[in-house]
Amino acid sequence: MVNARKQLTRLIILLVPVFFLSLNSCSKELVVNLEGEWVVFPPNVFIGLTYNPNISGSDASLDGQTLLDLITASLEEASKELAKLERIVFRRAISPSEENIVEFYYHGTEEPVLGTYEQNNVGFIIKNEDFPDGIEGLSNNHELEIYYPRDYVQEILHEIVGIDADTINDFITKLSGLGFYIRK
Image (cartoon, rainbow, N blue to C red):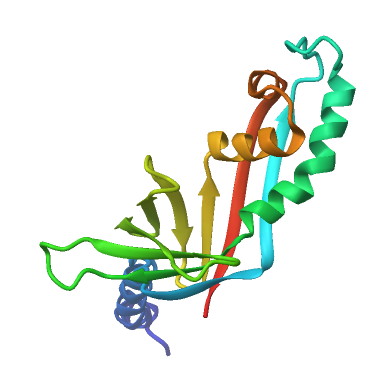
């Protein structure tokens, strides 16, 4: 005859270590290493926007639909402008007194735009002459995303479309740019 109590005790003794191992392995934080070179994943740069169709902009000759048509026609060109950032190189500081270095390499230029970065787990902030207030990003060790700030993307649209920046600002409720990079 099988003793159910003994089998239950054996089962608990076998399952407790497995249970604790599974808890420990799932609770570990992802450690991201940004060091190295990242290249734009065949130019994957996106601009997303949400607009206000009831715009009453400062330019009286434009209604909401005309403005939307102008902006959407220039989104591809604006995306190409963001895609000029072809690769990014991260270099970790050698000593605690130094800063982490980041190099932005743009299409058609030899010299990189130098800056610094601060990393916090999977997120990071890059500061350089193009983004003195910082630009945010995320990584999972294989993919890297850069989130372009609204003002930066809006300025690119303003230069391409040639419409008053305030009118564009009133018309666009949400505006964001995203660059997608992979480790080389």
